[in-house]
Amino acid sequence: MKLALASSSASVEEAPKQPAIQVSNLSIVFDTNRGQNIAVDRVSFDVAPGEFVCIVGPSGCGKSTVLNTIAGLEVPFEGDILVEGAPVYSPRPEVGMVFQQPHLFPWKSVRKNIAHGPRMLGKSRAEAKAIADNLIAMVGLTRFADAYPNTLSGGMQQRVAIARALANQPRVLLMDEPFGALDAQTRAVMQDNLLALRDRIKATIVFVTHDIDEAIVLADRVLIMSAGPGRILREVAVKLPRPRSSSVMLEPAYLALKKDCLDVIRAEGLRAFNQSDAS
Image (cartoon, rainbow, N blue to C red; front, side):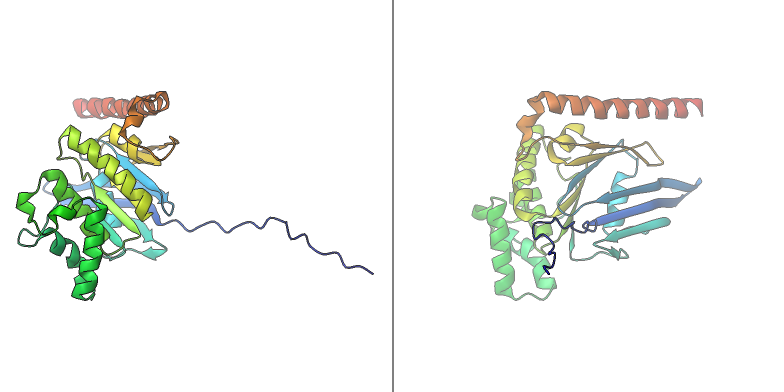
């Protein structure tokens, strides 16, 4: 009697990957002179490993506050945040952060700014220097390795800040309007640099911006937040092909996505204006 053997070609379903970031029913409340202010109200979203998500919304909507809470710099009033399955209570080396201003050590060279994190984690001087030099080359600043921050342009300083955030090899990179203070031309160059860098580092990225163009150029998905209290109004999938550069802004598919996002933002802006006018 022959035994029936299972086909070796039978497909085996892979278990779904755990989200890199899970934000569940997040609310953040600040005490003010007028009482409690709800900055973020019941926000929930997941970010898949390796995904690039942009959060957009009007000033004061709480997008930076959400990012700071994922980084462990703010404490939730309600809700939970998990990074790679672990609750967030404080900053962690596997989560890198880049702010709008570079905040470099002015007394340290480019190389020593970038090597600072690895040194704090116990790497030897030689190991930290090797990490720094690799990242300096990656962000195109080899000629300026021994320069000090005050001798660099704003775009160059921000490249140092990005390299410094990558020095601890974070699996999650949080970026809070990192190009907001740059002129339009430098900003476009930095966006292209970040896209090229993203393809190399394979990190999960959450990027806060108020610029719809920037969000669509960079992201796999855009989360649009309401005026305060901040809530997620809409999620927009950006299915434009990669590799991608700022030249994608000329494509019809890009323009359609931009119109979709702007329609949501304009409607929310009008609602917020009418609400404040009525009060």
